[in-house]
Length: 415
Image (cartoon, rainbow, N blue to C red):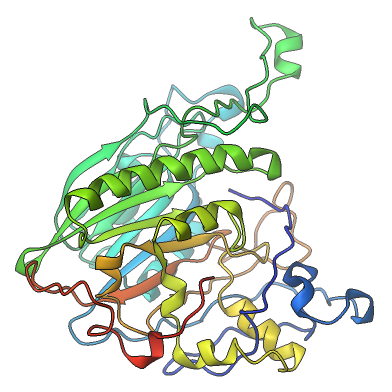
């Protein structure tokens, strides 16, 4: 979903740039000045020139996905921004009519082009209308990609979108958590009373339904079965959208996800678990801190070794800082809100340097999603995040990071 609220994000650990090995970076911005969202790590705002307006282009992420290492499996997450088919769902009408959001052929082709460049073996998705809509999209636009395994389940969301997966490996035990009760930290998110009855006043005051004691969009959890007895458990999430007033709701959702993960880890501390999706939370937010404190590692920490080194160079020119920032931006608003979070056992299998964000057409800085038609070739307001892992046999895990990662992944800082 679109969310143009710009939080202040300190990026002292996320500056400078050098070319990614075997990958072509996205085009640098017209101005070398970092946005205000980068905070105090940069020069005083008053000393900067206004950021120049950019037109449509590939502004964020990498234009080409890095090649996979031999034997690696690619895991990715991608918010497709309201993938609705052209079949009317009678349960979605009036303010939430689904047909008015039916994906155009142009945008469906653009989404498919991104997915083909991504070439993920396990592709976790957000904002999918239904399993039927995803099946139609796969069969129409993704032929030959080997996504023989598909799952999508109702998330209990008033707008009718849910989380899903396309996989080249078998999927089992799909689960949603619609009835789960969340523990909220305060009353700031309590839903306001809604007018009753079908009256003009009720229609005029119609607002987004919100219950802070429930997931706004239930996650979907499932297991992926890989050759050699290797199993991966995935939680695909889409946290509550909106500004700071919904922080407590997002935190309550995160706390419940962490609880689910810990339940699995209590049974097997070396379990391969991944939490992926649209977190609607910036890198220094409370929600991201909660996942970090729970011991879930960030896939971003497995980015290219040159970029890790460059990120520690605080004296680099502003243009280079901006270019690196853009390379790991996941939303067209200029924020990073999509993540791949890893249990310690699963982190042992990640290929160092394999994390990346893949670019697609940005509609231009003057684009207003509320009223403008996106340009031809536009796919989504999000950019997919991905990394590679090499599955070991189920009994071969050491539980030690030293044996399974190169020096490129040591001494990294959480993002």
